[in-house]
Image 1: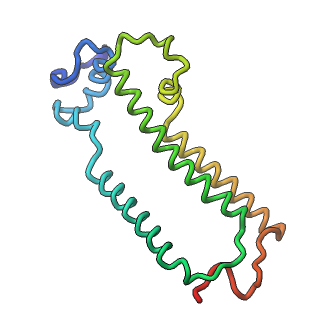
Image 2 (image 1 turned 90 degrees about the vertical axis):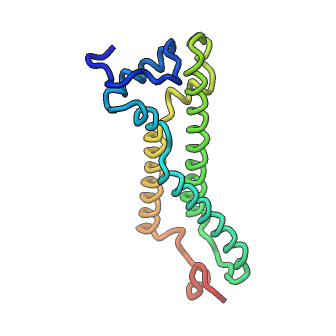
Length: 177
């Protein structure tokens, strides 16, 4: 138990016999003035939902525009290393971030109501591994590391003069017909 108790009572919809719920109440409750704001800090805000819906709409719109205008662009030589360096790894990191966050949330919710589960039995389960080792900060760090390594690689290619040729030079990468 901490030195000071929260200024509001334990949430009635939580299980008071659950040690994890009590730990959360005593460690985080001191930063809130009332029970409602304490319980609401677990909910995602309206800005989060607006950003998600906007990004989803933007992605769908971009895909539709690409499909609609696919014949208006002239095909030219592409740089395969650029595609491998940027598009696939970053796309993979975004998808893995969503999947791992979902698994972690499901596992934490499952464990919140399962105090009778022995931790030793869960040692090799995927949920426990993700709960222990996955954080958003780690995923962001890995993504930034991939971007930095690819920028260094591209800088070395520019200095070396390799893998950046266009054929034919006057057409560029992509132009409208």
